[in-house]
Every structure is written in structure tokens, then in C-alpha cells.
Length: 312
Image (cartoon, rainbow, N blue to C red; front, top):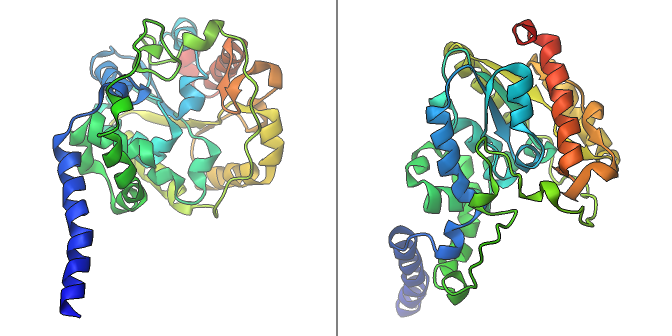
């Protein structure tokens, strides 16, 4: 029996040790290094070097595929930094990774996807694991227990991706894909799809999991830190396909009610940012060029309504 248990232990531990070595030693693969996740390095540079006064945008791809920062700059006179990359990085990490760059006078705008308020989505997924292991290992130190619990299941898949030939031998092209590091412009907006045709896609189904009140608590804690730095925080709602909106209507309304109850500064309403099909690009959160201009104009109007300094 002891021999069997010893063999079982070795059977489990040897692959685990090998996996750990791969995680620590092997750098990001060439294919991975070109992905949109590596835009975090460019966005951190913008956070460090963009002059004040600044608008810092935080969220998932509803922002990276949904805002024209140049419009914000021209209309409001603030220098925008769009930090948005991917929703599955998780709202917890998005806020924690920005806080160190905040200066007095900054205006921060969070536009979270509705899934961030349900289940454990706010703690991140595979994209968070790849961000802290491939892109910025210094960010490991800001992960909390819930984030680690969320990303552990992706460790085997991530480790074995380091030894896949397709990660090293693939056809390189000068054409920029919409999900690459090079797809972002000087403000952090994805712009490659602005001249492309709309793609067919299905509406999102219902969001899984119960409402997670921890997301609200985290936003309140973040707001307090922002206030202490002499900056101000606002929340806005994502531009979302109308078909998906109606599927999620009660879940979206619950998010709205909880945000209002928490007393957070809110720009607009969910229904205001409900987008017709003609304005969508390739997912229920990704807008085409016309949709981006429309959504950005709504945000500008909402900012002017509540911050009178922006009207000057």
C-alpha cells in the first residue's frame, strides 16, 4: 500500500514540478508575444507619460473596441488613456493595475461588462494568467486569493502551450489582426476594424452565476483610493447590442440598481447605451466605426452634464 501511495504521489508531483519549471523559465512564445495582452506594456507607458489633465478609461473590450479617444480629447480637452484590453483579465486586476499611476486631477471612467458583476468573473480567467506570467510578472504581487483560485485551472493549458510547435512556427504577415498588440492606436483604442465590414455573430446568453456584491465593494474601495489621490471616479455602461440587452435585461437592471444604491458616480443609464444591430462589429460589445462615434458622443454628453469644468 505504501509503495502504491508513493508511486501515486510521484505520478502527481513530477508533472507538477515540470509544469512549474516551464512556467518560471520559458518566456512567452512568439505567437503569444504578438497578442493584444502585450498592449498592457504600451498602456502602462501611456499611464506613466501622458500629460495632465487626463481621462483614464478602464474596462474590457467594450472600451477598447468602443471608444474614439481622439474625439474625447478634441471635445473635452483632456488627454485620454484607454487601458482596456480584455474583459477576462477581470475588473479587480484592471483597477489594481491602474491605481499606482493615478495623479491629482485625473478623471477615471470605468465601463465594466455586465458579467463582471456575476459569479467569479471579476477575478479574471486565462487572460489574467497569461498577463501576469507572460506580459508583466511584477503584477503577480497584486493578485489576491480569489484571483489565484480563478486562474489555477488554466495552469496546465498554459504550460503545455509553451511546447506547442504552432506557438513558434507560424506564418508571419505584415497585416495587423484585430486582436494583436499592433491593433491599438496611440491612445489605446483598437482601430484596425474601423474600415472593416460588420461580421455575423450571435447574441450572448444569460450571464451565469449569482450577483457578486464583492464587485460593488471593490468599486467603493477603489473610489476611496482615487479620492485620496485627488482624482475622481465615474462609472458608465458599456455599449451593448440591443438583442443581448433584452436577453440580459433583468440582470442589467440589477447591476444598475446596486450601483445606484452604492452611491457611485454614474454616467447615463444602461438603456441609453443599448446599441442597434447596425452599429455592431463582431460581438455584442464590439462597435463598428459608426457605433464608436455614437457611443463616444453619448459619453461626452454625459460627462458635460455632471462635470461643469468640462464645459469650459
